[in-house]
Amino acid sequence: MELIKDGKRLDGRKPDELRPIKIEAGPLHRADGSCYLEWGGNKIIAAVYGPKEAIPRHIQNPTRAVINAKYNMASFSVGDRKRPGPDRRSREISKITSEALENVILTEMFPRAMIDVNIEVLDADAGTRCAGITAAAVALADAGIPMEDIPVACAAGKVGDTVVLDLMGEEDQEGQADVPLAIAPRTENILLLQMDGHLTVEEFDRALELAMNGCQQIATMQREALMKKYQSFEED
Ligand code: UDP
Image (cartoon, rainbow, N blue to C red):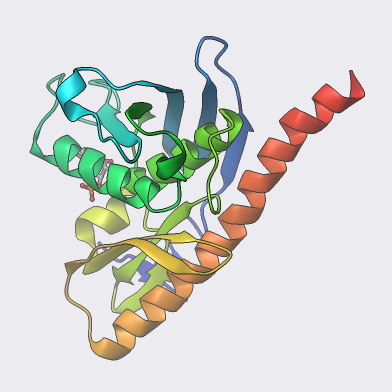
């Protein structure tokens, strides 16, 4: 499959262009904080519960809160029905998401507590770990969890010998590399960096530059989504 033709990608995007993104803060009423995110063909719900007493007690940390992120793909979210329940991939994504979020949440304010972050992928089209972290960050802010910054994530990669921003499904499957990145956007501190495939050092630098830039664009959208919810409260 020809992934790049006349400088345009399968969905008509330029190499440095993001897919369309829509973010809504606080769609769920029972959760302490929530977010609904559409990002290209991805649809994701994030729900935050806590801080609350960590249970079972042996997981409690006397100096800080435990962040418990759980990433789950609905069985209907992918082409071939996915077997419900956790698998190696979802455990890995839950772990890296917990670790990325732990580095910006002021966990030492809540000793012995836990903060549950549920990420449900309803529809998947590549880049769901980045979309999950981005949605979780908005849900955490919506829950009023104190953080150094609102984390954000975006991937870049290589398709048809070109370094591109934000791979969609076919590009992820047929492409040459995928580099998911999560950052704290104010400092550009890296919270997550993975690489699947092969890149030269120059290509890697370019992918990182594109992904950083993508993250900054999405960070603006996250803030707009939160402002939209909380401004409407002020007006009431
Ligand atoms: N995917 C799938 N079935 C699975 C896991 C993944 O069809 O069991 C698809 C899905 O669209 C996902 C993409 O493959 O978004 C890429 O998966 P990857 O593991 O690279 O993670 P992601 O890019 O979603 O963070």
